[in-house]
Image (cartoon, rainbow, N blue to C red; front, top):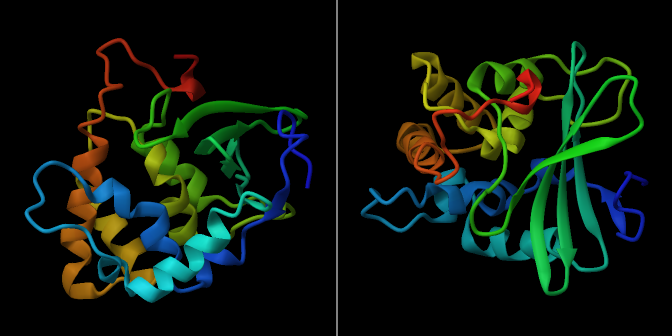
Length: 207
């Protein structure tokens, strides 16, 4: 797999991984640290157990294989998520892809926090709901939304957002009785990111 700017990285298609036990706790659990949570986040919040999470982390964070998750959209830019498993410089990179362009634009990287740009809720929902019909990548709307959720960077949270995230969590296996709390912790962390700025704009609106 070739992605401009990652020619030296051992990129592999990661699309089968979200269906495996342990994936969502690895991808999202750190985002539940919102400063208001009395309990420590655990894999069970995502329907996983510790053994599942540990086993899949060996695949996700393998320096010799960097999983790539393609989230192409039918009506505009999409997203590519890359686990950059470079020894000494680990991170998760988020790139925008533009229809008709051969390049991908890096807009953020997760390395304990997520500096850089992000997307407003309407943009996240558009990308999640409009998979490109003829492009390879993740097609399930719930998985698409949760894969790119760390890009959320908006001071205005629509009332439907928490409901939508809760439904996505249960769709990928999170327990129904805790999904609402997990969704609140996820959004609580994302809305407390230090990157918020009154003059900030989305990269999709030339901000």
